[in-house]
Length: 501
Image (spheres, rainbow, N blue to C red):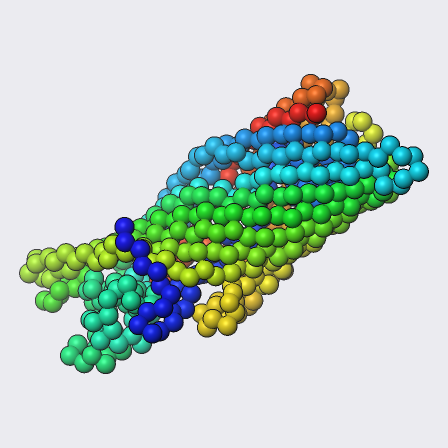
């Protein structure tokens, strides 16, 4: 496949922005419960507990709670079902995948000097698959109001007819390319077809509504984090720690939109059906850091405080598109159009800054019989930014995020009961919507449970979690924005094997 690097074309600098949306930012800004089976079973409420490989992802001081060296590996089965309602028509789709969810190790170096109040230094490294992007969503229904033509008209108005007729596709901006698909696919017409300076367009889709539409989205990939940790203990009462995190992302999305209308045919050729395909590949890496502290107020009560910085991603996008359409008239004459440049646009890199987070934690330890733990985190999603902020497209997008997103809270509660070598666990997680309208992405509720068995130097843990969230997703961010209402239900089974060295 031919690839064209869009950087500098015929003396004009092309903006790095193309089709970024708020949803692209939210893909990386939101957290997920991942990690060890014990961590997941207890709802991720480990900010004041520590002593678990995944607790470092919440509060890096947690590694100083370890008494011995530990190595662990975690595997997960990820099953997600999406129920869609689009203009009162119900559909569903699902995806199942197995992943390496977490792997890590901590090494404890104790200071045997009784006169030294700094009792230990712990170093660790963990890998976590922080987001599994494998997913399928299928929606269909009859739109009584809007057609795909609104998408192409939104981009085309303001683009000269001369550009669409004379400029090669690979030399066009993203806006011009979208207009190109609509024009070459006969979905839109220039108001004055003989005037190359024309910048106004009209639709070639028959009026009357009753547009049957389908949209299928297939995503693959992951977002992972590699953390390097160091922590220490002061008098076994105060625990301090820090993480340096390297993030890697690989995201692929293939979407296919189809529209057919059954409106009365006309003497002239008008659109009867359209299929519009979009493929997006986003990849890159990022950096963040974390600081944390845990205080053992009494032998039973612990309090924790952690800060996670913004994550700064450097991302690259590659996009390919194709369109196929058919026109008909009342003489039963049909014409097929194929608009497939067979070109992948490779865009200049850009930066995405996701918001930081504060986590406040408390835990109560009931001797050797059990515990209860609570975390509350605050994150301001309105601080999410695309950079360079001087880019005009990013300015508008950043302004939209600042206006539409808010600061919200996340509550995690976990408990554990120990019966000799057996541990029984349960957890709950609630996260409020990051949107002011509370509809684009709704509140999240998650329930979890699990058990573990201590064989001595080896531990085996198993967890199950159920997560549900509702979203409202338009097929396109521009023009055709009527939402499909999605209810996503995620079932996850996680198995962890731990070794104390």
